[in-house]
Image (spheres, rainbow, N blue to C red):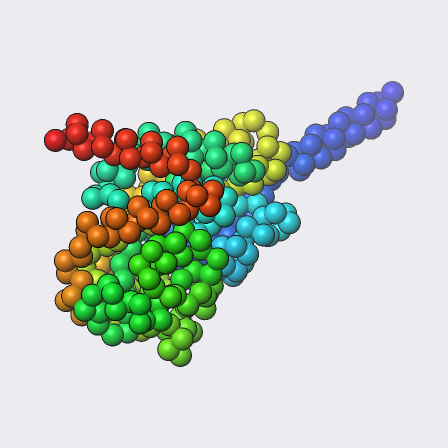
Length: 335
């Protein structure tokens, strides 16, 4: 009888151990952010928090620095199950839920306060848009204020029609704005921009100060515009297939830790982008001709591009009008 009881207890213990082993999940997560960067510091802290709160049941394995390829490559690997999550800039966001990119419309917002106010109003629409397209939005973020960087000075924006300006390959959003301005860009994956600047294949890029330093483009572009054209958006996403396979408590953990992650990513990016701008101001020369951009003209061109993208179904006219209304309401209340 004792032998039988011992065997039963052993079987129960083995069964329990097997259940715990099966209850361990690994989130394979890719990002272009290099190790040691502002983003990766936030992601590492997030990973430790998730591991601690889940008691090791949910672990995050990072693939930083673009080792999983460009953002379209990351999304393709997520579809094939090789990855389960990624940190994306606006280009990647546009591959999932393009209407969210209205927040990147050049010269639409005057400051971060306007962006925060409008985004808070449309966040439910963005969350639902990601979910409809088989992704769970864990955290919202930004990549920083977008400036022009060039190997030689620009007297006016019109000169960009004669420049070899880089366009992220496959980025329909920025392509529409370049077309509205009459610019003919050179389309390259982001992983090939440094080589393009080195060989002269491209001579101008639109980037954030933080990214320009992190990607080592700053050393190739001694001229920088002082006035930003927009604030780049970003998102931390997990495939719905992976997310829905998690137990409810781990789903809730991902979402709850995503809230402080979002706040940290946005605040740290804004802080470090501003610091990077100050560093580059000492290294680069200002584009004197771009000190005062004709905002009325550029706003009209932006509206033209938005209309084109709405007609093509890339942007949502309903969401765009909501953004316009919320922005007007915020400015009216502020005044």
